[in-house]
Length: 138
Image (cartoon, rainbow, N blue to C red; front, side, top):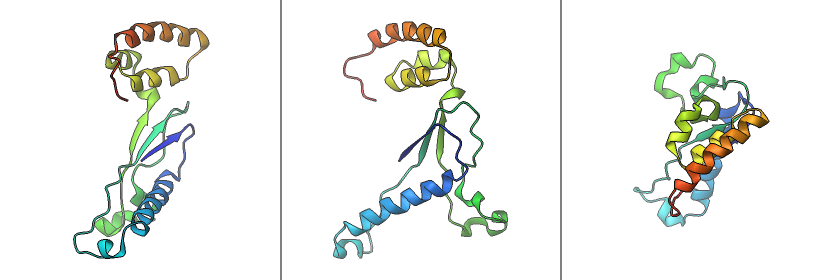
């Protein structure tokens, strides 16, 4: 699951939980009753990722359990998950250019820069894109 964000959202863990519950509910409701009641029925794994391109640093918590008061006291008894954060502004230009794939190119262009800097990056990316295999996958 991928959530795109341009602003820091301090409710992100709760929002992601809501999305996960809806995905699981959909799977449950669209699975034959006999199959979902079998001992070996399992839900698919859901890995939550947030792609952030905002100007300020991402400061929201990454663990769901930290949204509960006194979560430290309850150990593993609280529901918990952690999401993966891709903050595009944390990547260096050289790092993105050297990776040389479509995603890194989009990250490079999406970083907040002035017009002249974007033009320079487009020129650099032109060479990177020329060298990419036509059969690439994102």
